[in-house]
Image (cartoon, rainbow, N blue to C red; front, top):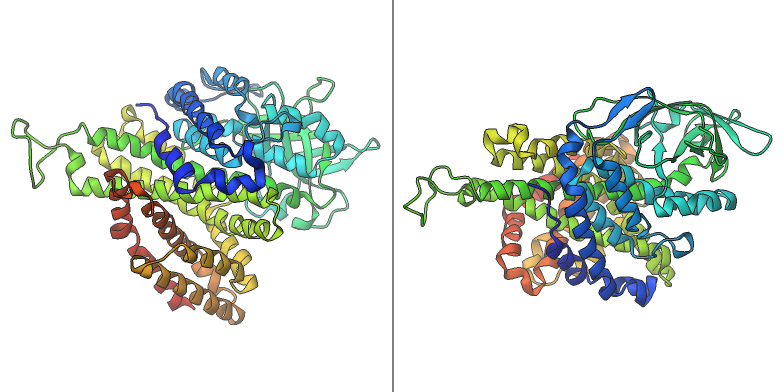
Length: 561
């Protein structure tokens, strides 16, 4: 069973629940935020994903990518699908018109990539970094680099990588040893080894633009000594650069994406963002990538849920209380309470994840382009705080929820035939890359919340609270008050015992995610369609099976502080 983009659900959340056009109009103008334009873009995206990319998921897993003598061959059909993707203009969706882009809202790109990841995670790894690389170069590249590389990145003619990790320096980038030696003409010779480089070598495009973190000869140690360099696979004159793929990793999943060990052997490169400004230049790319990864969690969970629902609607086992078909020896398992609970709970996570991720995508555009400085600042605070929450909480649920969906199949889920085991394997990496989920929790609490005593988070929570009126929201409002109070106590506790917030950062992020889910479901509940079974059942699952965890997490925070 191939993934089918749930166009009606996505359209409903984006256009009805969030009213994205009205929110985006002050920043992007009436044309870019026109629902009459956004709607057909979503329709065409759903057709492309369902018809071109989704059928390649199984072949992406078996046989996967092949490596031979420094060259990587992607699975059958992958190159043709990518060429169709590029020719249809999908890479240029949210890029600026002056660079050959379409200038449409980022959130449309977010929906597109949610569907692409759900349909075929391995294939989607190749174009997933394009927009982040484009934004990085657009904001920090020299005029010469922009002229030479931006149009090709915007169009997808060339793909890009983010080359950060080294064998001894994973999350601790300050330990990176890759060296960049200045040349008389202003270029640099880059030497070093990078590992876990998604798409470091492939046959989808002729050229690959590597964005490589390295260190100048006189640079200080640590993160402040890192600079960023653009190192192309092919030089402007067509010669092969000194960027070599030494091997691809044999992985638990994601076999359709080549994860490369890259050796830069005096490769010619150019600095992006200035000496010692490497992490600042990468920041734009990393934030975009982390929101994309959050949507991977949403999409992969939805893909697993589609498979589980399809199986549960056809599989008969045992009897459940209530009306039954006497002509059949057993009932469909979709009616069993244990299975209903699994399916409705995952749907509650998918729906809330879409509300929050799409709103964050809207805020990205508002932070860049809204005419009101105060609104831009509020949008930036929203993105800064919600990005680590979304990345961690929804990739965690993407894996664990997919495992729950496998449970619906029983023993059949453990064999390759049904496809669910591939989603479980593929989804596991999203909890690790683009900053492990533990690092996301530390980033949220130690870097985003505690330094200002929770003021920025308090502003976001106040914004949520304004939407929560009526007695039905009293428990969530109480939880918001408890989270703010716990934040204040943690700030005081950290002053005396600095390790305290590190111990419970994961619980703090989880509590924040559950508060945000409550707000998302309040938005969904305010719509006329809230009484329909499609929305009523996951809403009930959130209230009964997910929401009680918030009290537990808040209790843990209160005890720790």
